[in-house]
Length: 185
Image (cartoon, rainbow, N blue to C red; front, side, top):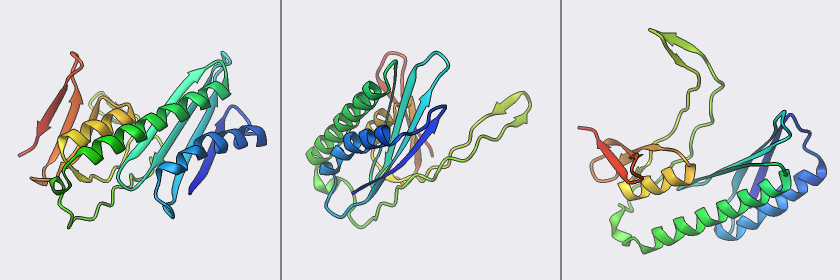
């Protein structure tokens, strides 16, 4: 079951918009196990040039799904985000089903819910300004799964705990489109 947390910035979330979001994003319920509850965090924004941005984040047990789209039409952006999330789910399920079952230790219980984002706090130190702080819970995984998580979030890098060495590692997208891995000692 998907619960919804819908916020509007510079736009009032009307009953029609809420029903449309819940109807479209609610279609993703079929990809989750029965009885599994997730919360979809939906952020709707309208900019001064009348462009609408839709952001949806769904933190689940082993993956965080995220998609965003900006266009002239709020409803078209919602449609695009729903399609993108569905593609992410299918891609993730396909890759995880192809992996050998013994590649991840079954004795470990994954508690990989990401911590909520903190409010922006500006901290100045020697000319460096930190404008946002994120707290994340690192979960054990291999580099391939970390790249998949990175792609799903739309980021250029991803920090994770290596499931074999328990070291903190980073995967990143290189300028040539391929991926790099930074391993810590």
